[in-house]
Structures are given as C-alpha cells and as structure tokens.
Amino acid sequence: MDASKISDIPVAELIRSAMEARKKAYAPYSGYMVGAAVLTNELRIYTGCNIENAAYTPTVCAERTAIFKAVSEGWRRFKAIAVVGSPKGDVTQYAFPCGVCRQVMREFADADNFVVIVAKSEQDYQAFTLSELLPEGFGPENLNL
Ligand code: THU
Image (cartoon, rainbow, N blue to C red; front, side):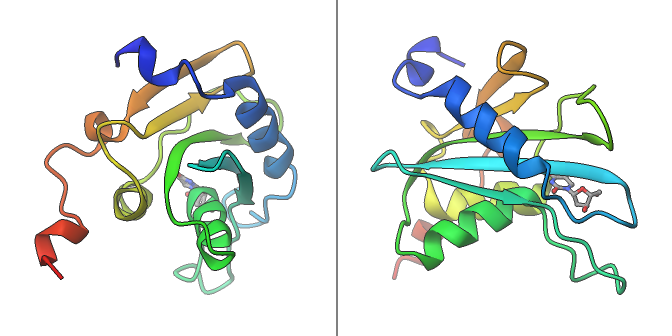
C-alpha cells in the first residue's frame, strides 16, 4: 500500500480504540476475541466487538458491529478501520477481516483509499487498502441505481 494513504489517519488512536472494544467481546463459544474501530470521513470513531450466539449463525463480527453502529447513527462513509483479534488473552496474531466484513466495507468505502489496519499493538501493525484485500469487488455502482 502507498504510505501516503495512511498519513492523515490517527492509527494509534484507532488501534487503541479497537483494543478497548476487544475487551467487550462476547465470545463464549470460540474464545476468539475481536475489537474494531472504524473512522468516518468526518473523523469520528465507532467501535465494535464480536458477539456470538448459542445458535452460532447469528454471530456478528467486530468489524460489522462497528460499521453498523456508525451507519445506524447516520455516518455512511469511512476512511479506515483497525482490527485487533486473537484467542483470549494477549494479542498474538494479526486478525484479517472475514470475507463478509470485507464486502460490508465495500458498501460504504472507496476501496482504493479505505485503509484496513490489522494490529497486534499500537506499534506492531500492517495496513492494506480494501482493494488489496477485496480485488475486483462487487459494489453499489454495479446496480446503477
Ligand atoms: N471474527 C470477527 O469478529 N472478525 C473477523 O474478522 C473474524 C472473525 C469473530 C467471529 C467469531 O465470533 C470469532 O471471531 C471466531 O470466528
């Protein structure tokens, strides 16, 4: 990813917010705890955690919790998202967003400029554009409404 795309993004604050949200993860079945923090075009931050369910399929990922919270409050365009995920305890791995969450990001972002940050800590992270993680995606413009 071209480093200039991340220059105006408050990376440390986003990662810190995602770490804080991870503490709220409800993951009694997988034990996999995820937090996410999404940055709106207006520079507001919304956070989310994964929320599991005894019936399994209603489970929702941290990324979608954060994005849907923002959209439901009226914020529809996003610049970046930070994701922090790992089995319970310390964060020992980079948690890449699942395919469904990548598609949800595609709905509300410019894929060539939206930055996805996967982090182990505020200093230890990787950044990608959504286009890199979801190449040739299907989006709202395909429906031409
Ligand atoms: N999970 C997320 O919250 N985000 C991802 O990108 C990957 C998976 C959650 C869903 C489920 O609660 C747990 O992690 C294990 O899949």
